[in-house]
Image (tube, rainbow, N blue to C red):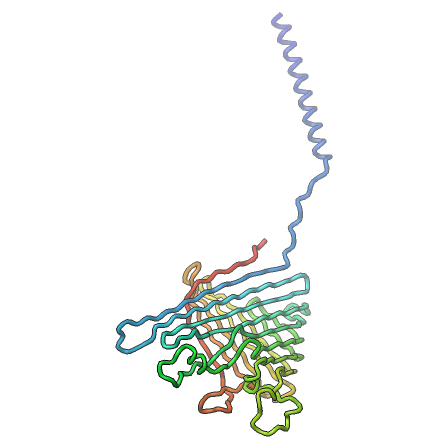
Length: 341
């Protein structure tokens, strides 16, 4: 009986093993015949976006200081936003720069403006060769608020209103504003340098404030072209049309993780009036990253425009000069950027 029971156990075990193998084979066959589910393809990314924000603050204070001095406070804000599109042979680059600064000094009861710029650039391109692109570019340059030269009032114990009355208006929103549209080509020899030449460039210079039109080279209205001196501000046009050629070079170099340098040079020649007198704008920015959030920044701006007259006490009729400014700033910097996939 023991032998019979052992024999039966072996038979049942063998049958169970055969059934298990058969079930496993059928399951494997079913898996092979089942429709395969493919992983979804990665969605292409055509836009690359970034926004750099920077806030700088400066302060000087004096207590019982024999050499003299005025307590002052300064603050500037800078935004550099980029939105770039690339797909096949088409590219579209957009950049918006907003720059504004103010200062308060105890010797003047007014907040003075130190920086003010709105610069929008947009360039559409179509690849012609490995390093050349056909381009159509648009540029808009303006400012937020009025700019003044602050003169000392001639009255004793001058009030805030006396200081306001003594200041001289030099610029304002849309006074001036520059709008250009150019057709040409980009040369991009590497990823840090772009040179654009637009032999067909049209431009508009807008000066909305009548008092400033003469200083920014606006033309006389046709009915006042033969008017005798002195000419009234209302005699000048608010818009000047220009047609010429423009050369623009942009370079941005990252020396290491802590140092960035960028420069932009724009040269414009007006075919319609004194084409040999180039209009030049040259901006430079150098940034040292001290840690994750704080940077030391040096900026320079150079402008030459023979249509702009610099008026002062010694030259009431104005004169043409090279304009230059520079700034050394310490502040907070943070960049928002699209995620890389």
